[in-house]
Amino acid sequence: MQTIIRRIAPAAWIALVLGPAAPVHAQNDDFTGVIKYRQGVMKAQAGHMAALAQLVRGRIPDPEGERMRMHARSIQALLHNLADGFPEGSDFGETRAEERIWEQWDKFEAASEKATNAAKALTAAVEKGDRKTITEAFKKLGKACKACHEDFRAEEE
Amino acid sequence: MILAALAALALPAHAAPPSERVQRGEQVLRAGGCAACHTDPDRPDQFLAGGRALETPFGTFYAPNITPDPRHGIGGWRLEDLDRALRHGLAPDGGAYYPVFPYTTYTRMSDEDLAALKAYLDTVPPVARPNRPHRLPWWLAWRGVARLWQWLYFEPGRHRPDPKHDARWNRGAYLVEALAHCAECHSPRTRLGAVDPRLRYAGTAQGPEGKPTPNITPDRETGIGRWSVADLADYLETGMDPGGDFAGGLMAEVIDQGTSHLPAEDREAIATYILSLSPIRHRVKSPKRSSQDEFD
Image (cartoon, rainbow over all chains, first blue to last red; front, side, top):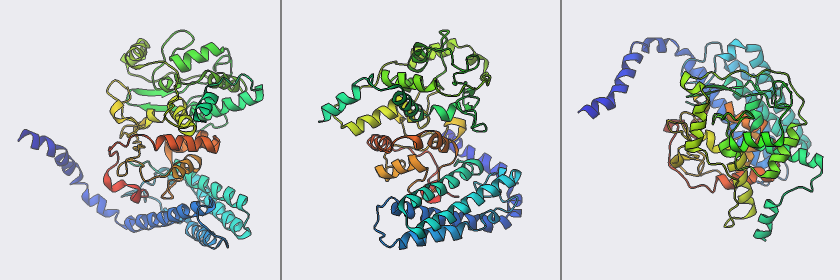
């Protein structure tokens, strides 16, 4: 009996603390859509980056560069106006977006622009078809992604 | 063939001209992750000048200045002083260092790498940045505690290659166990701050700065068993995991300041060794937060 109580005690506490807070949560429901959307966009980018990495490293045949072009263009399109996906206050809810985004909005916007420009440079490199330039551009884009996550995304709990 | 390669690993590199030695020293520093902790992320211009805070369950430690500044850095150190610090955990005044400084790993460093590191550190621009004292609970503030800890848990001694494995694996084992100290962050610690030997590399919910670190053993469900050597080598170069997500936080610093500067063969060696570890089933993150949901 005692073990059961011990086991459910933390859950009971959470219910007690979160219970009254539930209506507050409901107020922020308007951000659910924007959070879900930007997470979808981020996942789509990740998928393209994962695929592109295999092409850039020459592990998949792509003689005409057709696949690379498709992925690079898609990433560029997905990165367009990235910062718009982060309206102020949308750090509430199921998100790892940090409050710092809005505290340092200029820095955040500059970082997202850096990613957009890196994606443009990558598309341009892919159009030209020079392997070395493509690899460099791909790494640069990765750096831009990483830099933004480092500053503005919370680590997983 | 393998024996010859091992012999080459063990041979001292005394024939190396100074500039080559300095270059090798920089690689030791990069592989050892020194730059990530000893550089303030807000002042990347003050390279190796310390000041970075490292929050741990035992208090907040501030990494010291390791530039050759004679007053605030380690400008006056001889090779023997660096040896005592890195491989014996002792300051020049004989005081014991806290194990937040991973001498438990560096003690396995080779003589040649130690000398190369010293040669490189002597070339770094000195920065006159004063050290900040650690913020510790009273019972830890006395350094005798660190000495006691060393007596309990610290076994000094060089790394020994394993002749059962090839040269690449052995290079990886040396890089990971003597320099990169992956286990120091990717393992849970006991109440006394020692790495839990049963869960070495299996990740912890209470890593540095209270953040979780993932299980990096090749367990397919809870670790990185689905990663290939190329995936892991790519990750250590660019920070992109096989799902296309980019590392943030401390691991991004480790990559930026450390592994991305290594020769590609060294990253492959590290990946080869890590993926050869015994898989340990140990889930650090909640199941919902698997690689499928890394953006949630």
